Image (cartoon, rainbow, N blue to C red; front, side, top):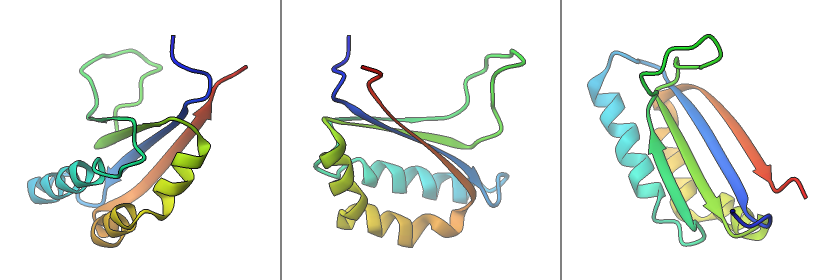
Length: 106
């Protein structure tokens, strides 16, 4: 079981130009660089799985999951120069972003 202290930061990205292989590659490269933020304990870069059920959302281009030891480390991530650089250099690539942050239920 994962620690209840963990802070989970899950971001979904929809590309401005979803048909562009160049934009897809650029956002992937940006996310890979973002993974170097020191406060991230673990990360995962994903794309929609090929599952097919009514409850599954598959319209996004990428999911970005970052796991932090706690809220303080996530707060540090938000102002980390690597994160700020990612936003500055990649925000033109997406048309929509949804963030789901969660902490332990207990």
